[in-house]
Image (cartoon, rainbow, N blue to C red; front, side, top):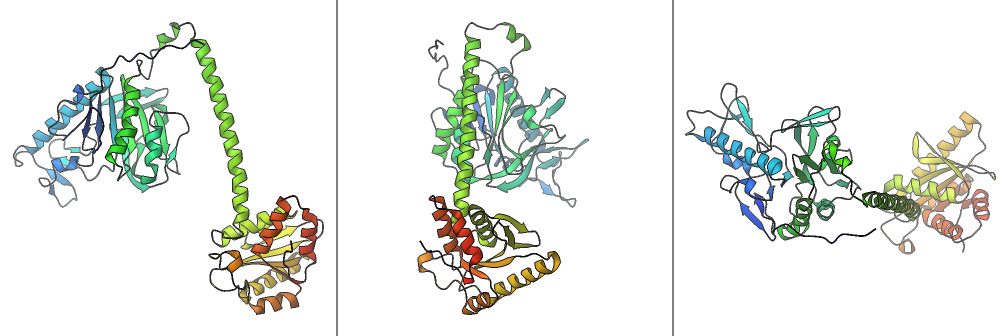
Length: 452
């Protein structure tokens, strides 16, 4: 498929940054109230954080808990605010609808806002500058700006959507800095029906959203507090340039499909092949991740994430040795490990400081008695201990108290350390036969140690 030379027809882009400390070529920084017309730029970057300073200090906090301005006794502030916001909103609409420009908005909590008293009263908040638009996608309808809410919610659980997008580099670079608010549709319409959701948190709230409006687009991005102005410019400005260099609007007219060009079908097939390859790579990465998790799970025998992590590691190790492990629902530190050679009731014990004490031995005995009495089961017991996990296994002290060792010997229980179990599993992973290891555990009487 023959390619086309890239023809640069755009003049250097002009970018206006309002309240946003960002640096880069073509960027002009200004204040919301004093900037030139927003429609006179190719792109506008707005951080709404400082907007309430326009009315703070003049509004009155009244008994109903609302900050309010009363026209007629405010020295004209209410009218000035209304005129300013209306003018900026019209300029944003012209930027997007007539100019095909880009509006980038930092997602912040809307804050208290202010109410302009009147009949009827109306409110202004950090997002009063957003354009008025009516968007339709299939059965869904979204009215801007009232159709979108900015809900305060802080976190660092930023998950990027896997689809390629020009903003991916910016989101990846600053994801660790976190967010302060999420985007929610007021009437429940899925935001993905109107634009591309680029990032979510772990419960699915939208954090970044690319929304086509007219022939332009609004790009909502997480706040990423503390981002370097120079690095933000290096990451974000190429994204804006990529948008502005697109010659077609995001949403094409329906009749455009009747004007295909020679070679477009070949391009489409090539893109589909790339998508298939990407899916294969994604699946392979997922398989490798699962394999890595299996290794990490076994390494948790040495330094687990608490008692639950140790239990999961022991169950995984026993599975490698040929046991079928069934954790007990009412005792998360115990499991029944079944095999053709015999069954074990296994209890794991973790002690952060000092050796494991006799209470763990007694808990295993009680579990055995209950299992034998209720189910008449022919089962033996094993206690797996891990003490002082912060230390290298070769530098740890005794893993259990002397009373635990004597009690396990006297009651015919198997007693081993998580480190010995790790060494046994490492032997099996290196090609060793798991059967002798499993049978050795079942036949042990008291303390069991792995011998290389």
